[in-house]
Image 1 (cartoon, rainbow, N blue to C red):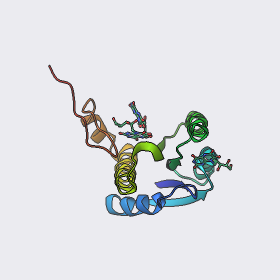
Image 2: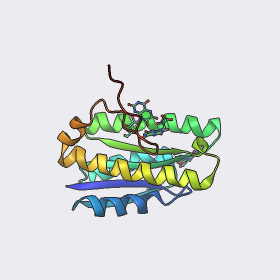
Image 3: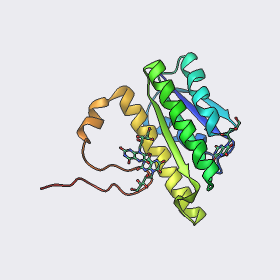
Image 4: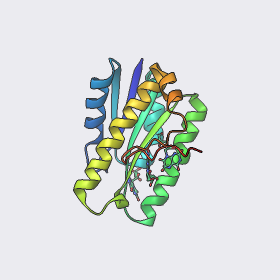
Length: 152
Ligand code: RDL
Ligand code: RDL
Ligand code: RDL
């Protein structure tokens, strides 16, 4: 099985490098990396990676602070869901919003954790879906502390 990793030159952090590092640590899977200019290019990148034989694609996107950037993200999301429906395969969307933190160090921490956790989610979806089932309803988060379940 092959994991597609699509990242952007727009991102201010090398999210692709972090994803590959985590993939190597967590699984024996091969990968194909494809870097595009920005998030609106990610749906096509995902489709191209599926056409090259990938079984799942992880898109790594960085959304700027302006309303224009946020609209670009919505467009990207619709496009990536279209690719999922057309191919019947998952595109795991790892997105960092630049306004998630003021402090660049904190932004890096959120980004690194979100990338690593979603790489593991992608591998588990492919190889070990029961692992996700065990975590159902447990308030998992990526980039932040898990919030946990509501229990009565
Ligand atoms: O196809 C070329 C570009 O249009 C494409 O790469 C866009 O995704 C670039 N881009 C924007 O035009 C924009 O207004 C991006 C953002 N905002 C953004 O927040 N993040 C991006 N690209 O990765
Ligand atoms: O493909 C991986 C993730 O992008 C995907 O699982 C998202 O649905 C995760 N997610 C968000 O990124 C988000 O900003 C979720 C929420 N909000 C949310 O409110 N509820 C979710 N997921 O189930
Ligand atoms: O509850 C705090 C956060 O989970 C919430 O603000 C999310 O919307 C943040 N978030 C994103 O904005 C996003 O694009 C998350 C993801 N992606 C994600 O994949 N997983 C998250 N949060 O837990």
